[in-house]
Length: 369
Image 1 (cartoon, one colour):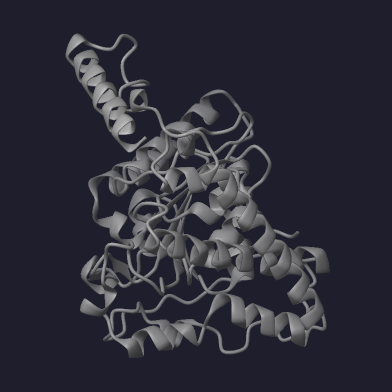
Image 2 (tube, rainbow, N blue to C red; image 1 turned 45 degrees about the vertical axis):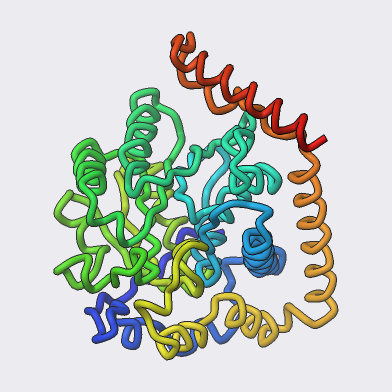
């Protein structure tokens, strides 16, 4: 695939806080088959977006049924997840957030591992050998300095490795964001900052996060380029990330990418988005759905049909059924998991707490039996 990137206009905020979306998005992107992708690659973009959406909906149902814990939905942001992941090279490092399960799976994290994480299991943070993915981060923006440290290490060791770090618009209001960008710009590190501007940091709209017209332009203050892309267009996301990775690999420093996108659902399953946004706003963004719009393009190009759609969705369903069965069939968690892996030698007070918990669990099991 080529490294060509279409430069995009920078626009201001609309009255609804959507970041100038009406003037920003192209009305008819690529009416003919793009020459820089094969048919197989175009199929993969669509198939993986469908997989992530079905995975996301399955986890929402599992959470509502009490079979996993709190979950952070991703529906609406599939183009950002797939475009960024597929643009990365073998050996590049991904540093994700809690909403990046799709990107993590595309970079080698097993489906069952992601399910185990949302089920509150220790195994959900175990990264397989040879998979260059950092454990997902809950604390907002705290992963950004980690990503810069990884990129600095790669530069010092003369490794051909670029780090892609993902975050939301709310993270740009944290000090860690500014410290990370300043350090990366100063030392010209091989890192790509990928901001999924999904319009809300929980309930705070993007228009209340910054006085600048865009988040992308913040990169200028730290001495490197910023770029804004249509986060509903998987090819636009891919090209932007591909270009930024190639630039970083050449030793030309970091890039900040702002992808305009939208989360259809709640911030997490413990949130009620109807308290801070309207149905009209949601419907406006659904009209630009990343999966529906790309499916339409594939069909216009003669690359997709109902039979292929049915075959893929059957495969996705089978994968998800197997992964959920694997998660729920795993041995039960041990009380010791709460105490291990923090200290080389567990202190006496925690040993006492562990013994008390194990005794209580054993008694509870005895009563149940």
